[in-house]
Length: 543
Image (cartoon, rainbow, N blue to C red; front, top):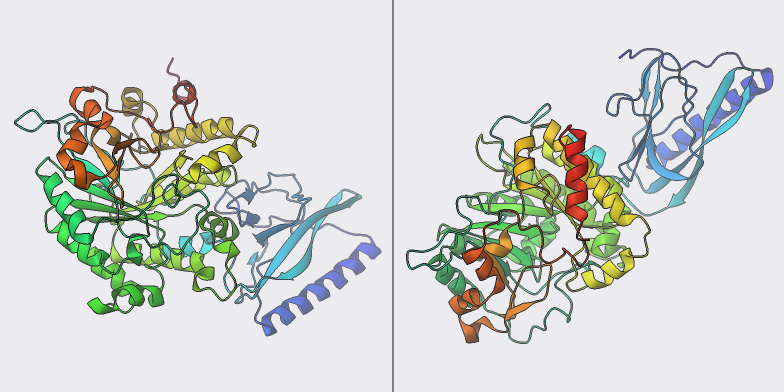
């Protein structure tokens, strides 16, 4: 690809030349004003493109939107945007990119518009309007995180790459349906609540809703550790911490991690990341352990060899992410108004600590979780998936479940015409890329089929374990509210396990991919997976 002389101005009429000079002066004055006032500007204008193919996403992107979308142009085309956008605009001219980065307190809204052609010359110019936001960070995290977190797999993934995250709960083919010597099906994994405090207010939360359960008599720290110890005798190998609070907002959580990993039980921790990325919060919950910063907390977790982190990450776009976790409604004085900054810092710290280090034959210990996929972020999921996987970060996404507030979210999503077909297209897009890049082999796809989590390990947790709530209630899994035991303290762990539908799958089932009993036939149609499988196989010429 040529990288020179991508733009040609041509000759303009005197009126246009005079206007061009005035516009240049206005731009220079505006830039100086913004610099002096400590604002941010990363913008210039684009002209008609000739003589160079600028369709390459990485090298020659002209306009990068804060939604993760890139606007690109082909040779001979004019870049035209007839709507206001928040974006980074890069002008590739003979001298390279023109960029003016300064710390931001304002958001620059950019409007690209086409002026009528003069002679044979199409002109596109940039109009700027500015509105106050009170933000110190840019609207998109992508540029910052891309700079901070290097690519691990720039080309095809190596042979033997493990398509999983450690301790996530996806059981191997050899272990699934295995039994103890007395014939009892093994309880291999458990989802568990830790703590009841969460400072966020996710509108889709599957737990913090009285339709799930009411916490009158929560399980104590000692009771939870005791049930894990008892479950180990039934074959338990790993647990996943999901809720009901964010686990790092529990002052005994690090103590819990140390106790459980000492039993040789692996732990995958789902967290929104704000404590792992905020010094004030990390100190608030862990000062009694001598931890006074988020980096010290990340290091303390990394010292425990059997812990993985699953970081909630719905969007690179700040406003969208704030809406997902509910901080968009917080007053400006709230600490968590800077939630996205803390989340991004947590991801950088986790990478710095080595959670995503590649070890041949081993799964990564770092994941990003875009759950649920909503109509608002469905078009960003593919980029999130490829961005993360290139960096040896497991990327899990799935549609809305119908547990807790997810029930309301599912009803809202019905209003979006074409949403399910867009989900199907997303699954196809991810699987095609994953197969082409050797994340998933075509043979594995033909054998195992489509997973609930596109491009990831199939889900078989409902044939290997259950969900233990903070209230003592035992459920099918996070996505549904079917109750196996109202209180494990009354029934006992073994009875709760053996009387569950999940136990019947573990004992008598023969599948490997159980897809999602919580969504299939409810929020997902019966033909969801078969439609995707047929389209993917067709892409590779398999009938």
